[in-house]
Figure 1: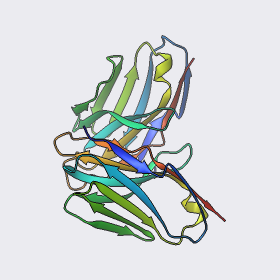
Figure 2: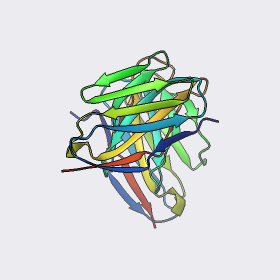
Figure 3: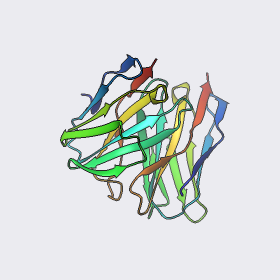
Length: 112
Length: 116
């Protein structure tokens, strides 16, 4: 049974810092992994989607990496801004199950 | 233009009532989903439809019945509401099912259901 863990649960950093959010999963037989952000009271916004054959994806100041063998993905945010404050969720789809399993998220606060 | 929309945004009702939540996507996607986010913010899939056919049905009480009249709509009907049904329900869509290569999910804004 796939389990997804995100560490840390909460993170507070000053503006301008580079930071890394972690996502771990127990079953390495995955189809893909997706990173989302969720703002308070809002839905989820897709940030990056990494297929199982890929090692990383980049979008602007965001870079997500995937290491299937170790069951880990990281989301790197460069030069953080107060507008990056949100909860970041990773979700993993496991081969044969046809569904995403979500982590519990990392609540990020970037201080001005 | 709203890609995935849900109505209502808030729903407050009493135990035992029957209610529906509607979802529409204008992205031309073939697959739609319902998720439940509990008070601890844990998000879990409930149902998934591909081209109006059910492809995922998690261990959800029979009181929950999804209906897909066409590819652009996936509604969720809940019978005999219970206190434990209080949560935020999210609708989502994707161009392909999870095994496809274009499986980026787009989420609606959520419906906060409160059962009193």
